[in-house]
Length: 333
Image 1 (cartoon, rainbow, N blue to C red):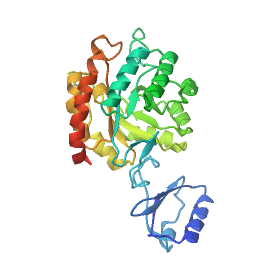
Image 2 (cartoon, rainbow, N blue to C red; image 1 turned 30 degrees about the vertical axis):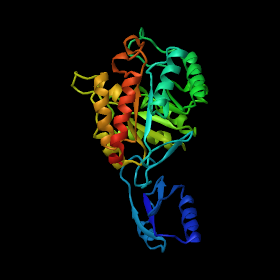
Image 3 (cartoon, helix red, strand yellow; image 1 turned 90 degrees about the vertical axis):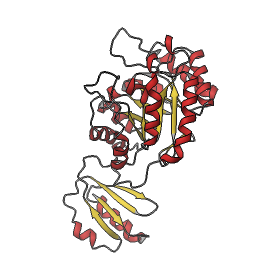
Image 4 (tube, rainbow, N blue to C red; image 1 turned 45 degrees about the vertical axis):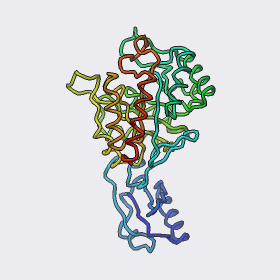
């Protein structure tokens, strides 16, 4: 349920209303936007008398929310959420450019890529230390060593970092990571999501291979219900009958998610297509349809990459892509 308040509600009446609702074991989410203020009610609101609420001087309207996700619902938060990551903002007109290799292979490799992508305009570095692979014989990442390399490069280049977590047991290793990524395979690892909800650290939540938008938002709800509202949604392609590309990039998800939720939405064209020559057109299309950012795989030697080389851009190609993005960004916002 959402209570829309009149402009400049009388403070004592508002406090009395909140106390009355809380006495009925209802959790209150207070949201003050540029044009209106709302109270989002979470809990059993079936016994709340809407007519009684409408009779209050400070109440303009009351609406019941039928969607099962409450915290992630735009009706609770009319204004776009802006997340600040060590001075880098995403959402609400702030564009986030994440770039880096799929997998961390060495200190020299990551440092070279990090310096290059930052120079080209990336404001966050990605790099996988723990790698979920379909085959148990494929390169699984450098694990703890890779995470140490990532944090060393973060300090050397002065750039925030994002990397993927695989299991709750790894959480202590991620204290200095700026954004924790939950991959497509873990989108419905609810125990992990609940733990991340108890942390103040931003979470990059990727859509599962066959997940609906509602399922993605329900996964975000798991995190947000624990108190952590700093969730970034990521469209990274879904599995369809098409085999020409690695996955099918669902760009309609971007405007649809922004209609349903106030959370920032970014796009991963690298994993979505699996083909480096398709990354640029899909990235530009993502910007044009209103994405709040991109996450691009960049490798200094894609032909010899230990993971996902065919979908990685070279630093030079990334630089050209970012120049094109800057040309169309003013028209996308």
